[in-house]
Image (tube, rainbow, N blue to C red):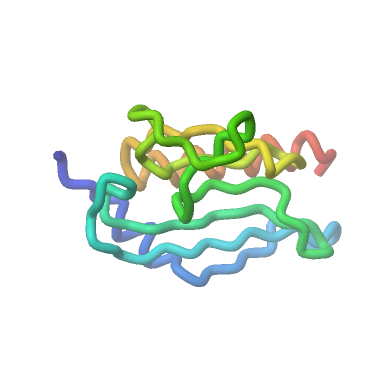
Length: 125
């Protein structure tokens, strides 16, 4: 596996809360810390990044904090392609979980900020 230089950048943002629109009250939260690499988190980091509204409601998120639940079967997926826990939660419908293909921490951050920008544009900000 190639060295993932963006991990240091991601880990440095652990505990960060950033106001992305003070007038409307939208903000993001980033949590990231090192863990022992596993089949679920082979990159050795556990992360949660989310966009929230003024009332604290989670509008979208990227994380690997839990397995991806297969709603059709009512249980966590055991499909071999879904053994990694990286996923994102759909804008304004966070119960919808979409697998995310982790490439690097740098790409993860880029994808998250692109999703935040898209969400804010859809929200009319």
